Length: 66
Image (cartoon, rainbow, N blue to C red):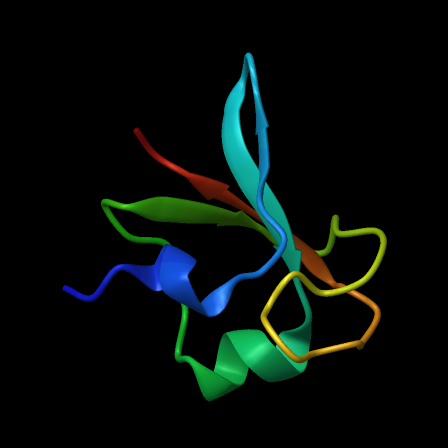
């Protein structure tokens, strides 16, 4: 399994863990669904997609598991 965090240039790290935001287009492009390494909070994103090079409004949050 590739390290999915490498496609993101905006990851927030805080006491609750690591997360970012992702748009529907990037989620589909990278074929992302919940996995052992991350979970997606569907229809809850707010802000700009955190995938490198993307400037779309985000649709989802993605939480990276430790």
